[in-house]
Image (tube, rainbow, N blue to C red):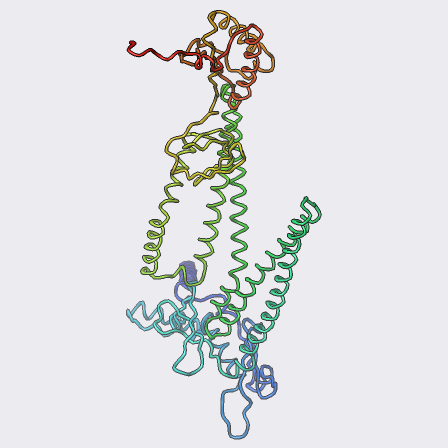
Amino acid sequence: MFRLRRRLGLWLTAALLALIPLVAQASILDFIPAGPARSSAQQQDEQALFEGKFELAKVRILGVPAITVASPVQLGDQSGIEASVRARVIEGNLRALYDPNQLCSFGERLSEWMLDSLLQSDAHVCTAGQRYGLDRSGTPLTLEVLRNGNGPYELAARLPGREQPFPLLTVTRADAEINGARELALVLELLLLLLFSAMLLLWRRLRQRTSRLHGELRTQGRSDRRSETRLHAEQALSIGVLLLMLYLLVLMIGVLVVAIPGKVPLGIELVLQPSLAVIKFLAVTLAAFLLRSLSTFLLSQWAADVDVPQRLQARRQQRYRSLLSTTHRLINVVGIGVVLLWVLLDIPGVRSASVSLLLAGGALLGALAFVFQGLLRDFSAGLVMLLEDRYAIGDWIEVEGIEGEVIEMGLFSTQIRCLDQRMNILDISSILQMQNHTKLRSGSLVTFVISHRQTDLEIVYRTLAFEIEAFALDPVWGNRLLGDPILRGIKRTTALGVQMQVLLVTRAGEQWTTEREFQRRVLRALHRRGVQLADGLDLGSAQPPMAGGR
């Protein structure tokens, strides 16, 4: 019997201990014994501090002084709330918010639970967590700044499950005067204005010195490395000073916003915008650098592919240079767009814009796309041009009478330099028909006009055949040929003479020098063998047809 009672007692004790956390909703703070009570006079002496006409008191959070509240010193029959009382009230509000006092003891809470379980009662007098709505659930709080008419500002906490915000503290006029928010903002604004004026003077001085250095370099007429280095350094310093001036302007706006009651978070966001913009710029720059390096590596591996035939290696290198330049430029443009969009979206108020504003922005983008449809057409044509490999940097092309070497390729335009060193810029979308003289291989049709007085054409054939063979076996000029020159024979006969052609197929871009050297050798051989070339004298000696002849 004794053993049975002992076992029942142990089981009942274990069950009660298991139900304690579910019933009491207590934490370890509930079991910490309170210290000895202090008198109101002692607390006032510890908290109160007089400074001029104000009484100051510290508000402590977990024993650490956090903020200072103030109240005017009461003189004569004046009445008001003392600063020490306000500090204790604020501390009590914070304690009630995060560690509410239990109205009942542990035994009373256990008794209430047993009665509620047996009688099915809905009374929860001892449940401390439901009094303020916090319920120790870890749910984040939302702070609000409230004001009743022209009264003081009040900081309150919006709790989940509670309709009315829970008041925490009230900012009085004495708090504003003793903390000097407006005075401090004014002093900061004056200091920032003085610093901005100094930066403006420095920037103007740097601009004057930069202009003077430009004039000196133009006067010298020759490049001076020391002067150019100094010029670049002063230009970089001028840009840095200009950026610092913009940062000071944003900082001044942020300080003004901070001085407005209830706008401290907005002011802090404005102050942080330049620093965040610099961080975003550096992050996107690093990402763009990595992308450029990756594209360079991939394109270099593509250009060095061993499976490409030797005759196509030169063209592959040309495409490599063109694709590398265009890819890097495209990465730079995308990076600039990402930075601008990222900075714009983080500006306070832009991200939380209304739907109507977003629709208006979409309509504006549509209008801009309609206005700049030519640029979009050039961009699309540039992408197609890159994919189809119509030409590359270094090619000699001809477009509507404009002939020259491709110097620069972009997604919108192409730059061509002519023989007389003129630079022609062509919109890609306007190129309807183009001739590429140097893609993969080049060639030239060399025409020799033989006079009609030269009756023995076999000598011409033998001379051309001999020179073709010698030219193909030449160690210098033969390497520029992709095959032996082809004697096409007589092309046509005109009044001037007999036209004979030789086809030269050369490496890309070697056709003109090869043609000139081949013509020099053939003409020297023809003169040496006495072959008469057309000189126009046959036209002068030709008799006009007789009247009535057929």
